[in-house]
Length: 216
Length: 279
Image 1 (cartoon, rainbow over the protein chains, first blue to last red):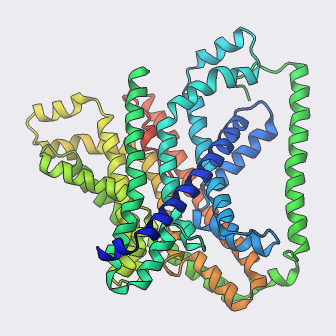
Image 2 (image 1 turned 135 degrees about the vertical axis):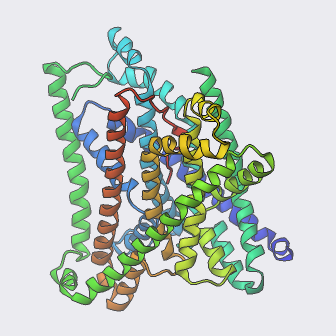
């Protein structure tokens, strides 16, 4: 217990870094994922194909491989970063975007067919149908799965700790190595800070889900 | 392909869509060409870099890595599934003093990064990396399996359990004989999809120094020289992705087969989006 209290500033730094990584990657992934989902249902075949291949490959890529690519292979190819955070954000956001695209697409499919038909019958084009009718309803139904993906993102950001980024997991590893006699309390401290993020998000997801379920 | 989202394209729309497709393809191909050119400038495609794949020992090391990955995944899946079943039964137990602690435990396990659990077991209990990887995967995935099966049981019509109890089955027998077989069949696609997640997560073994595929790549690159990093990494990543896509396809196939059967009169499962496997 003393170990945790002594190193509370480190934990706090790591916690903020984890929060930062997750928030930035989350926003990028949400935008990228929604664009990919829109491309997936668009009338343009090339966009559909690109989105499908992207989602299929990234969803089946282990996150560690994505990180390995961004942090170790990219720099050797001449793409260099000032900080490894950038590599971590690239890996996390491109990886998470594939899952968000799938979730949003399933939301688009869950909107009753009549909605799109009605919109088309009053003369809307594809962009209008998608932006004014389908996406507002689709995004609403996919809020709980999206929150679950963001929870996974918070947990996945721990992989960054193994690739030279000092966030919660990275500090945890350092502290565990420095305090060989108190490994279990040190890592339980790390776990506590992760739960501080993931448990409230999980409660939020189930609350929203109940609300949406009543509304429908 | 027709879609409800847009009208069947007329001649003008088809032309615009064709132009869009061509422009889109050119952009994507241009991006790919640029990436390949950049790689070529770095000398990635030189024959000597790829010639290492004619060496038997490279393939032996790669094979060892792959078999380490697959054996960890297989062992973890075989242990995690029955454990998940047990946790599920405890989670929906009628006795609050069992149900509530198990619920807290499941929330705890699901809210933690898998890699943290692996490190915890590796350092906290001083086990071998293999045991740390398998235990980490088992702890996390059994919690997820428990939640998936629970969602399946809850999606069953209430009458199933009521009828089971009414003909004199005990609560446990009703769960085992009536509810679980239906719930598991119903959640099969989610369960298989979670297996893909499990397989993907074995790559976290790289971080706790377990000699799986990615670690084998690193070892070979250190040993043979960094100029071989990209070819080896590329081949290993391709192997990983190919296996995962294969298992994902099996999940899709099971889902299709299941929905065909459901059309024959079986009550259709409500899609449980909240329990869809996440990365």
